[in-house]
Image 1: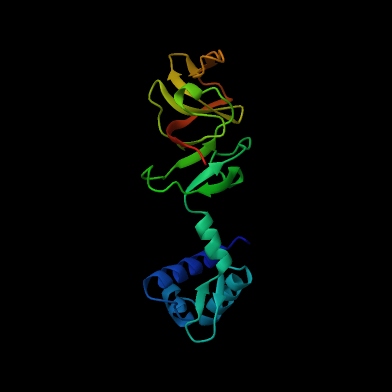
Image 2 (image 1 turned 180 degrees about the horizontal axis):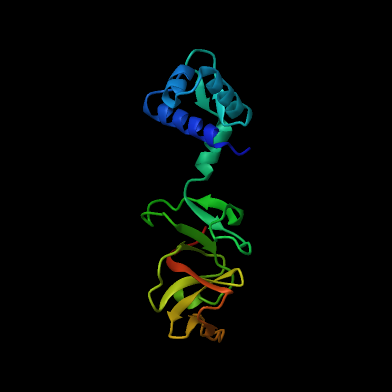
Length: 204
């Protein structure tokens, strides 16, 4: 869908709030609320309709949200699933997000969380299998020895993290495969500790 200007976003959010509270507002009510001329409101609503955000029906109070926009709202609920991490972008940048997954209420507050699909078998002894999904709380400190996500050269890896004096130790959990602990110099430009893993699930 086409992006909206700041004014268009404000009008859209006001229409949404009115629909949730008491029903669709009239154009005069929108004009009075924002201190705008009714003709300006008419033009803004025309843009919202043209861009596919609202739909109108016959009658005086005829403003409603379009099916396309309602579907978009539904899809954006849940925790973002991060795919390939683009170089130089924050991990939750829109360009990195593939979709949103709603895991229900098992993880409590989901602010700042994201989901990462695990690739590889380096953490199987911890019950994290290839193809599983881990839920990560971005920006939170990792308690020493806790499983977390670290970004190395824009590639996310899941390991048990130990913050040492001059280095970070990333410990795998697969004794059978003989993986060894990776040591990274603290403060390296290409390394960023993202946050702790708060849960793991798999799609059946």
